[in-house]
Image (cartoon, rainbow, N blue to C red; front, side, top):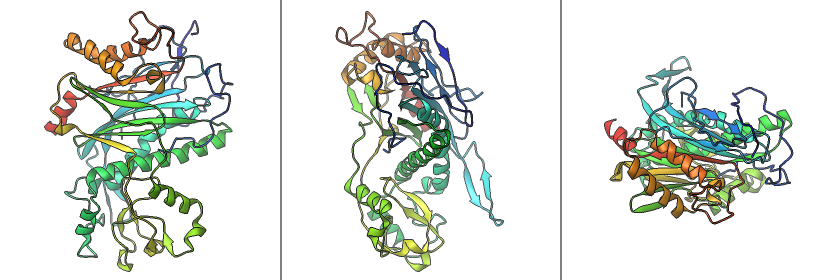
Length: 423
């Protein structure tokens, strides 16, 4: 490691650094596409540090606001792969605004702090430089907030309605939604997937405009309405660690389902539809009366659902139906949580040298003896980092040291569950 270290945060709109040629531990081939591996009101802050020999912690402040107790912790170590750290982290509070379409065609914001709130954590691992990861850390939470606000009325309904304004054109609409098994959590999944897609497009435009290249992975956790959603695109990983359980909450990115592959093919080559079909999926075949209404749908990048305003082209015969998963949902309210139950999120620098079982052993060894320490979760994250750096108390085999950038969040669930119950 370098003899010095520095900390640098890049804000939206600020010019990004030009990528440095890859170091000995980086791939010699620039990572081009996809930029963002496909797979908040109070803007979560992005943290960046590089070349840090003393492994000091880097917190992710929410731009002048105090983060909630369970906002997590990120420590980022640079292994000299690049001049700027390719790992980025962001976390903060999500305030989902309730909007209504006013008589004068304007969106009205109602009770932004009181309607629906949650929390957000994200880790990004850049490829071919830090630019894409920096952009993602500063952009994704805004994309997610917009996507959630677009479906918030469906989120708080007993069952998401076919039409967002509650209009019932077909008497059997509730049955169509029920047969598809569409629940509020599917809208959150759809919002996450659409936010990933939107962020990917933003990154592509920004990199092209600045003449840069590269990409990044993304691992995102969202706590909302008593559930923890874990969305992953890339090779970062998250696990739930309890006294008697280790549960994977994400899986390394793999090819999508056949439904999504066929829909994407139709997106890239619309001529294959011959003007007779729509690649979009709806709970039922749409009718002329649906025109102009906002109805449930999903596209090739989604396994969850969202709403869109019906256009004439949507009345064509639907191409396919199906179901898949890119997002894992943990029902926190259904768990009998203990104080030492945590979620560990980390980039691949940790998992390259530590298994799920080794991380769980460290968690279970450390937390019970530090119950009175208010910083125990931060110290646990620091211990996990040290275990990848060849320290004397490392669990890794001799000579097994991570030369990758390493970032870790440790998220305690016990008070998170209590907070959900209180609300």
